[in-house]
Each structure stands twice: as C-alpha cells, then as structure tokens.
Image (tube, rainbow, N blue to C red; front, top):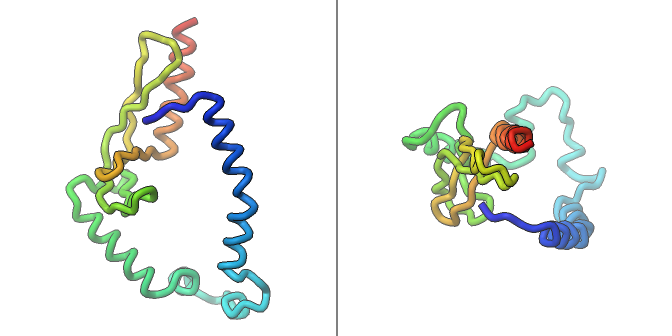
Length: 150
C-alpha cells in the first residue's frame, strides 16, 4: 500500500476537482438523461427488480455478470462474507483473490506497526481492496495506537 504526503493528496484532490465537471458533463451526454428518453418514458410501476435491472443494464450484460458470479463461487477462496471481487476495477484482470491484507500504521507508535484485515488482492496489479469494516478496524487501531503512545 502506498502512502502519500499532504502535498500529493492536495494535488490529487485538485486534479480531480478540475476534471470533475468535464466528467459529469460527459456522463450526462452519454447517458442522454432527458425526460424524453425512451427508458424514462416506459412505466416503471409494477416492474420486478429483475426487470428494472434488465432495463438499466440489458439482458446480455446481466447474464454475463451472473455467469461471472457463478464462476467466482467455484474458486477456492470464495466465501459468503468475503469481498469476492469479480474483476479488478484498475486493470480489468479477473484474478482478484480474497486474502488477509496487512495495513501499515504510521502513527509513530512502536508497539503497533500494522493491522491485518480481511480484503482482496489483484494478482495482476497487486492492488489491495478492503471492505468498510476493515477500514473501521484500521481506524480503530490507529486511535488505539495514539492512545497507547500517550
């Protein structure tokens, strides 16, 4: 996991904020989200969840996702309470395994160096993913680390 200093974080946020309006405009134009749209003119009332998903993503796309989910269930690291990521959002690789992730804690406390949380790792780009409960555990460890230091 890489760490950024405050200047890097500020630069990243500034860069993101500068392109956000362009991204939003592009997304709106690609989606053609106007009230005359064929999608919006269809009645949504009385539709099942499955029908709404089909309207939003298309039958072929949903079938493809179902097949990917079923294939993911067959992998040895699959678990109901795990992240079970189908495809890495960064490199589009399909080998993302559930794993323990070591999260370094740089609080200056010599007693707590890192915390191990459950997450996932992409075997192609080595990016790590952690669920929100894992992030909460890290934040709690940082707070505890600061308390012990004092």
